[in-house]
Length: 181
Image (cartoon, rainbow, N blue to C red; front, top):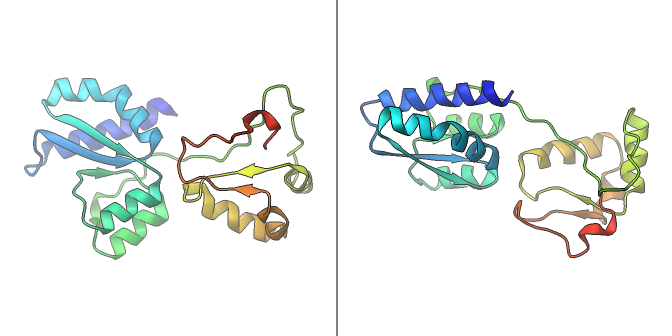
């Protein structure tokens, strides 16, 4: 999947470089995964084109706000519904959109903890309800999905008090080894 994503991003970067409006520096807005992919393929692209890649990263919601505010960029890697909204607002050109990857949501537990049963919807609900704490980004791409899912499962209110929503990916709880789900 990473190789396929890298090839798709590379194709997009080469298309940008071929554009008469491109300059010596190409500014890319995206998430941490965007930066990882560009770090992988960027040096080859830079050697082949002479363009320098500058990746600005944050959660997609923050990057979307930067675009709405008029911050200049050459390529934006965003979540599909954010891209749709920016196209509708005239901030992105519809014909330039290309879906290049999918991301899943995972569950992680501390080392040595018992692996939770999430094999069925009911088991997943029990695991969430039994967890000491649950953490996901305040504005991460998965936040909207998770919050809607928790409502559909009927457990949103029960999870509210034990849910931690940090502002950034670099956040680490003071009690990291305490057994958060």
